[in-house]
Amino acid sequence: MNTPQAPTGLLVMDKETGYTSMDVCAIVRSRLKRGGAPKRVKVGHAGTLDPAATGVLLILIGSSTRLVDRFMATRKRYIAEVDLSCTSTTDDREGATTQVPVFTPPGREAIDFALAGFIGTIQQVPPAFSAIHIDGQRAYALAREGKAVEIPARPVVVYAISIVAYAFPKLVLDIACGKGTYIRSIARDLGPVLGTGGMLAGLQRTEVGDFTLEMSARLTDVPDPLLQEHLRDPKLYLSATS
Image (spheres, rainbow, N blue to C red):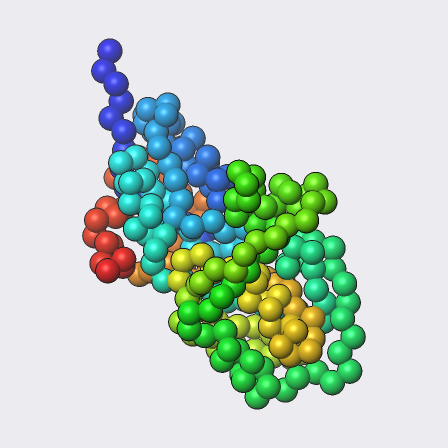
């Protein structure tokens, strides 16, 4: 009996809210198997998006999963909605929130000045509710158990931040950054600088390397069954990592 040939390639997805990145991988794997792929066909993603976040998610399949780290190292771009009126235990709307009284909302010039301090190579503390490993455990698992989570700051690169729209308490930012940058942490850390609250209220990833939203497909657009002919050749995009 012949073993089915494993497909290999790349899908550029526009992840919707409510799905984890691994949910998308599982759905893609099921569609590949219905297309004749081996039961254990490899499917991975190049950079997690939280369930509440949307946007570009690269899915690598078969032998192309060996390129995950290459694509994860590319520049990312996000549209982030920040709520300056409150803080959150998870640094986003998923956690318990606390209102922060702000008697004089900051002006746009003050925000521009504050944002300048977040550009370049900065020291950033990841959120307590994150997938960072602490003594062999995920930080979010410890946080959910009510245990104190102390994550050391680490260097990340932020290439640019600009204001898209602002009407207190809603601040919309366009952020270009490198691997490992937490947009939730930027939202959290901006608040104390401005004398306001700070949490992430919404997030959309608009670019990963050379891949954009315009190149992306939603799950409803992905063929079922999914075949080799439906996949992109990732080698054509390796310039995105150079």
